[in-house]
Length: 91
Picture 1 (cartoon, helix red, strand yellow):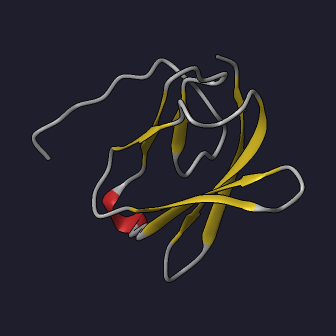
Picture 2 (cartoon, one colour; picture 1 turned 30 degrees about the horizontal axis):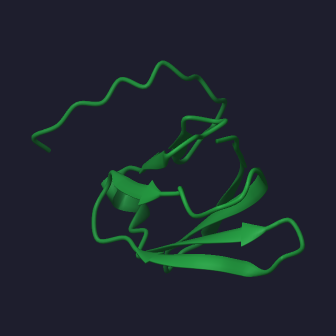
């Protein structure tokens, strides 16, 4: 890969990284190639799908300016598994 990322976060056994958290304008999502994520979905806390994003490569940048302040669940989908993380949006 031509890029190196240093995000200064440590998470035990983390398979992917969503940052910043809390987020204001854009969420960056990074994952290793072997995870093969093909889609990232954002849900509100009631389980309603808010947005879908095709994920052809890492990193994926998602503009969140249209989302209201609050808690959301981000789910990364791959053929092997789905990975989720809670994120807070504060404009």
